[in-house]
Structures are given as C-alpha cells and as structure tokens.
Length: 281
Image (cartoon, rainbow, N blue to C red; front, side, top):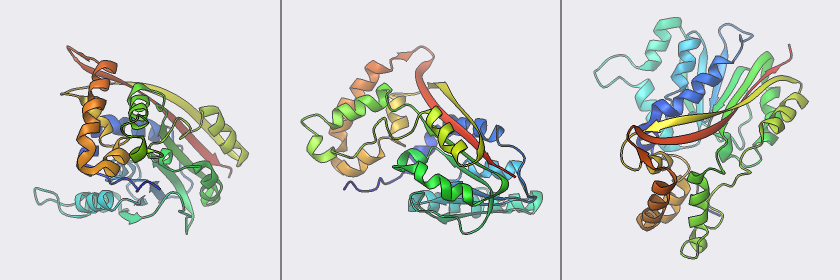
C-alpha cells in the first residue's frame, strides 16, 4: 500500500491566492447559521490559511481546523496561534479581540472523523478527493449538524485534465509502473455534480451544487509543475524521494507542451465542484 503523502506547507502556499479563491466562492453561498455564536469545523484545514476566513465572517464562533498532516498542523499552530513575525498578536488572539471567538486546530482524519458534538457548519476545502468513498461519511456529518446547519465542500474536478492525465500516464509507463502502481488518484476520485446532489438530498438536505472552471494565470518558470508539486504530485514525490527528479524531468517537458507559456503568463484551467447542503430545521 502506498505511503500517505508527505505535505510541504511552504510549497502548498506558493499559490495561496489562487487556491483560496474557490473557498471564498464556497463561503459566499453558506446561509445564515442556526446558532450565535456558531460552532464550526474546517475539515482538512491544511496550513489554516483559509480557516481564518471563517473567523472573519463569524468572529464570535468557536472554529476548529482539523487535518491529518503533522506538517500542515504545525504550520497552522505556528502561524495562527503564535505571535506574528513582527511580534504582533496572533490571528488566534485577533479573532478573540474582534468578537470573543475561538480558533484552534486539532488532528483528525476525514476517513474516520465522527463529530463528538453538534456543529452549525462543517466545511471542507479541496480535501475529500483524498478520501476514497467519501460520500459514505456524509450521513455521520449531516447527523452531527444542528437543525438548520450546513455541510459545505469544494473538490477539484480536473482529474481528466492534462496535468493529471500526463502524471498518471508517466506513472504507468514501463520505467515507473512497478514503483508507482496504485499511488495516484483517478478520475473517480470525485463524483459528478449530479451524483453529489442526489446523495445530499437523499439525506434530507436542501442542496445547492454547481461547478466552475477557473482560468488561473500563473507566473514564473514551469508554474503548473510548481502548482502540482504542492498537491496532486505529493504521492509521487513521497514515494520516489531522491529519485523524483528523473520523473520530474519527463513530466516537466510534457507540461510545457500541454500548458505553453504566453506573454502574460501560463493559463491553467481548473474545474472545481461545489456543494452547500442545509439540514432541515
């Protein structure tokens, strides 16, 4: 069985602005929460860079970011709970100053996490694609919502795009198939928007499901490779270790052809699927 991918928060955050935009769009569709102050879970919070956006909207809330990566949680604790680089108050303390809320982080695995208390909002950003059969977890999460509470998530829907298809083709080539068999996710890592709608309404929720393709204009040399090194390529980098450069040489060349640079940058189309499901009151 392939090892769990090792995460690099610094690499992930190199494209933080582009990665945060879908979360902002998801958050905009979350309706009023049933309790004030609300209890909120951010499932798969990563380095916590978007978790703080929840505190901006609900400054009095108790918000917990959950993740199963020690590297990501260390970054979240250091950046958001410790003092800032200039010696100022942490984002954790600032959230308390703004509205008396609480922002914290804890270890949890989305494959097994069952809420131990009721939540007004369970939200997940670009995490569930890493959880095989994640819709089987939906009933427990919806059950944990307070009446009128919301379960909202966003997942990438680009597994048939060149960035992922070329990665899989190279991993399955004669050179790498023995090392990388079963390492990468396939296009069934997420469901269709219609299938998510069916699953959520079957649980008694009022669901809003949609998809969007972002045209990210990336800058720098080999920016698509730089992007996937922070996310989709992590299982390959973890498995190959020091041998990864040989894989990257061929993959880099294929990406340059698939995503040619222009005078204004490199266009990286990225499809994402969104769902906002509200439990009946």
